[in-house]
Length: 281
Ligand code: AMP
Image (cartoon, rainbow, N blue to C red):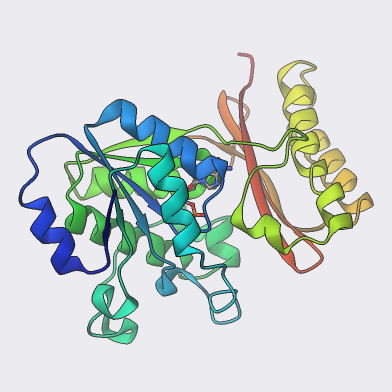
């Protein structure tokens, strides 16, 4: 497996390639969820490149940019074992040579302003901009993203469509621990007792989907019950919302393809999760 630490090295390598290339963008500190993205990417391409870049543009002023776990050696080891072909781990100065204050950016309107976008202003501008840049740097045929970050996936899909980027975007179902907790680099911030409580998030989403899908319970009643359940367990809810899948606008009674999305704090750690389900016609 090759490690490219600069754009120049990556470009030199890219110019030699003739096969189909898949990109898996990450911020590193890789877990089994990331490695499953690599497995899926391998099914769609001859060569898989994983980017590892903690993107300062998508972090807010009071967020965990400085403390975000950086484990490049262990990540490269895991990726080599998993059969990735290359890792692109550029420096911030290589990605944003003119500095963030004057960086050209991409913003996908409407969908970027809701849910995580409302709580984290500028977050999806940072995400859309770095993903567009990575697409231009790596020039992949396809790119794989996790449904764990469902809003991010839909932002990237819309950006790719809006800008006519020649990249096929593939989503992968969320990889979970045995107790249902979605794998995340941020789970490492949880204390042992918080870690024990954390699976309540997924249980609550499953119960809510079941209430609406199987039992035909009214959306607002099901949502109120789910919010109550989380608060009872000591979560501080940022949002818990039922949305239609395509553009994440509020779900109306005649929307059938739904997703429930949640962001909640457990102590100081902000966890997100979501679950897709169908409402019977
Ligand atoms: P991150 O390093 O957190 O930015 O994530 C990099 C990619 O891995 C994104 O496409 C995430 O959606 C995806 N990802 C993170 N956690 C999971 C998970 N538990 N299951 C599936 N994909 C995931």
